[in-house]
Length: 96
Image 1 (spheres, helix red, strand yellow):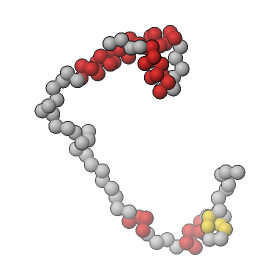
Image 2: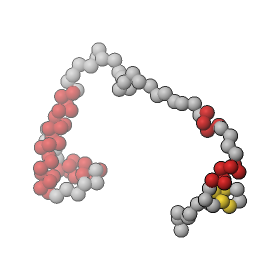
Image 3: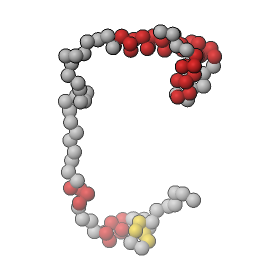
Image 4: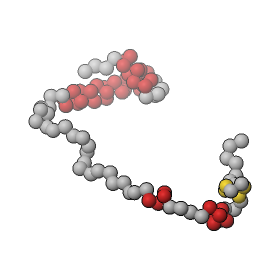
């Protein structure tokens, strides 16, 4: 399958690649072989194959949010801060 120069330029633009004319000529046969290989996949009979919902049988295991619900003594926590102001920890400015 021949790849047109316009198609290579469009792909290069989408990928934000600045390709020279020699690089475009060099990449054309590689893209053609890739597309030929992918085209071969459409010839494979997949009618008896079940669709996958995921790559493995694993599933997410989430911990409970019990740690977020613990009560803390604000005064005790503020004593640990190097500097406080109006019941909050004071930190150095990051943005001007």
